[in-house]
Image (cartoon, rainbow, N blue to C red; front, side, top):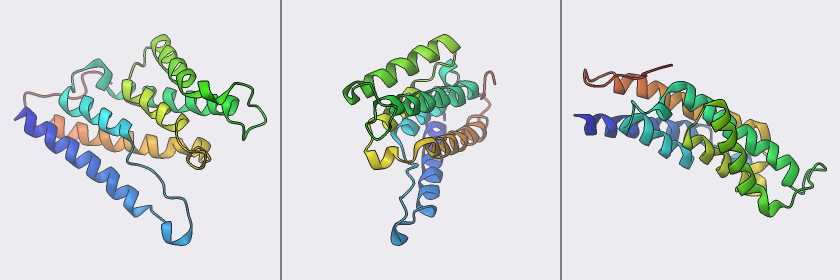
Length: 168
């Protein structure tokens, strides 16, 4: 039953994120396609549906970890991306610097959430066109987190043997 619950939660959360991406695709009018189906949500689904009792799967870790990952990557981009006048750090160190800052801030703040580090790495290692979305990157990240958390609340509490969250 637990494996079926894991399957259903993962399938539904990723399906909803995919449908939201499809509904917001504006490729025929030249708009940039918003990217919602990010790898960090696959990692998040692993925690939420296969290990819902894990401290890393709790709502505050999900939101806090993704915020730390996003904000760290966005700030590092200002100092490493030659498109910005503030860039003075070689771009070759952008990815390791962003990930190291993210994980250090997570450890210092207590908001340790591995998929959050992945979401920052996805941003900082993406193409210049992708990084042009800047702070708007927080929108698909927070939307995806909320979809996954909502589905985790529903699916993980459907079985008497499971309870989610353990702590808010």
